Length: 426
Image 1: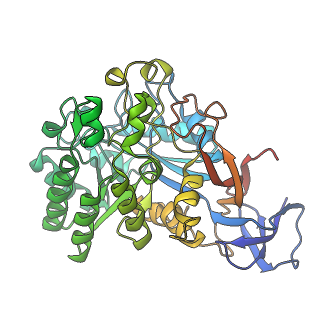
Image 2: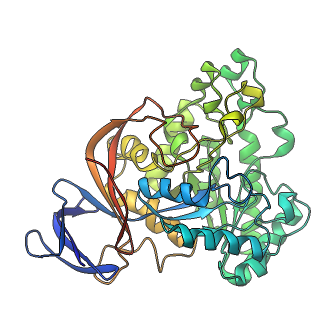
Image 3: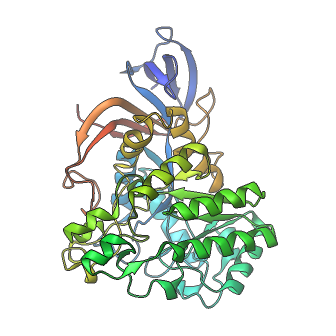
């Protein structure tokens, strides 16, 4: 059966009729000119290509008490995502062809969105020897993104070898930029607030030093480098400089680093404890400007679910991380679109087409809204606002730092190859 989304604004442009049939966009016509078996009224709504997350923690295998591939991808669908890249810090670590294929098959079984496993760079995330990069690339999962996220590949020689290795199959190393010696026992951003609270500070230079080193390594070997969860104004300037030299580097920012600051730590609520830490308002403004001007390429959630006992404790003992799949689009709408920094076409670029290209899944996701493209779509009400309620979630975890915050822009419906994976209750 065909589905007609009538009178909808593709990428926020002039209203059109969009017809979905047999899993693809079958026709696009002037508003009021097409017909379908099922009709969805898109009046006043924005249609975007399905979102693609390059940085999701699904926890399975190993920590199914915090999240599973099924619950995590359902949360993704609720947030408008049709594809996510599942990070490697599972138990066992996704450092072999067998584990990445297991995650990939779990994603196929769940069916809420496509799951692309991220392979570990080093064996067991230990930073001592390279993982089976080639075997993972040749596996059924066809891994193209490799990351030890949660840990930094701090050994420069090992990082160089990884960058050289993935060139053979057009892979990319996604670096968690954190100099470990500068962040031992660090709890939050190093600054005025950390001094007042008596919590060990996490200096910006710990991130910036690794980024500076790695962009030079990427230039030296001619490889693709991606910077995970960039968080400081100084990091922005390094990436901007690297791009001006023609270095093949891309960078991501998380929704929480676009909205929250280290001032939240004054509550001592561990829900605000995250890696890298929330920074200052000056950093937040620099990140927004860099996302708007293209220095930062994409928004990635770093969705990091945790079981209640890992967050319901004192700050120093709590795990790092926040959930984010279900609120990411709304945060970008609130911080970037409502403020005039970006258009909805820009949102499609930073949350769909560019992450799909970096992850090398652009044939299936992030495609332009055109006839023949897969019907991986999300319908958004740009004017709707809502107050986040952490218990209203598909995730198994509720470590949501946006509880009680009013956000703008609401996902109404998500389609994966023409099938509805989420429909909001109206």
